[in-house]
Amino acid sequence: MTAAELERLLADVAQGALTPEAAVQRLRRFPVDDLAYAQVDHLRPLTQGFPEVVLAIGKTPDQVLGVCHSLAESYGSFLVTRADGDTREALQDRFPKVELNDLGRTAYLPPDPPRAATGRGTVLVVTAGTSDLPVAEEAAVAACALGNRVGRLTDVGVAGIHRVLRQADELFRASVVIVVAGMDGALASVVGGMVRVPVVAVPTSVGYGASFGGLAALLAMLNSCASGVVVVNIDNGFGAAAAASRINHLP
Image: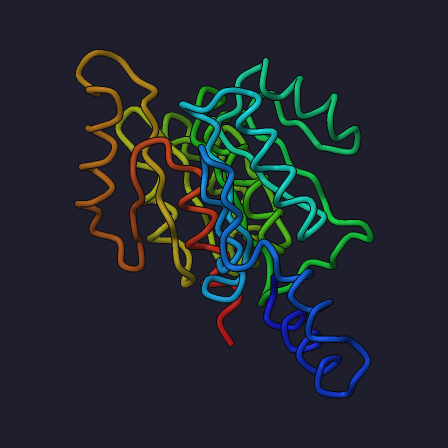
């Protein structure tokens, strides 16, 4: 339940348009919907501005469906990350309007009617290489679901640095930039040295043996000499989107 919805509910009770008993029924899932295997947190929109996001890893398709049903009942929308093929198929069967991103392994049920994007400007997701796209797509879908205008720049890594330099105008127009890169992770420093807006860097696990599953890119990004670069965990596209969205929605 959002703050605006709670305010309307209390106003209806105060004005006599709704009985206290009816209000209790509407609040039956608030603040937590106990599903035995999950405690669906319906206080999240009041504390963080957006409903709980479902991480599908470690959950059965039926468990994901149960949590999503609770969220859809309350908000008409949900976002699932790291959903495997079976889970995405089950969600599509139950929710025909769900938007699946097979590359990003996400499932997003948009509200009906759709909400207009808000925030200061565009969250631009920049990908070093095509191999980084799964993490980048998770970030892009999540940023869109969180209410942002989203742009994408794909395959502009430092192996051919002219590729990102020729996109300077688009970088300069962004409100927040998410940089997704594996291997040496150098693209985050390059972009951080070009723009004056916050840069959220996402190291990916893409790379050869000495990349240590993304640890080399993580350390390179943490040691960036460019100012304004912050770093999330390896392959954490959703975390980058959440941070970028909060920055983009600052008053």
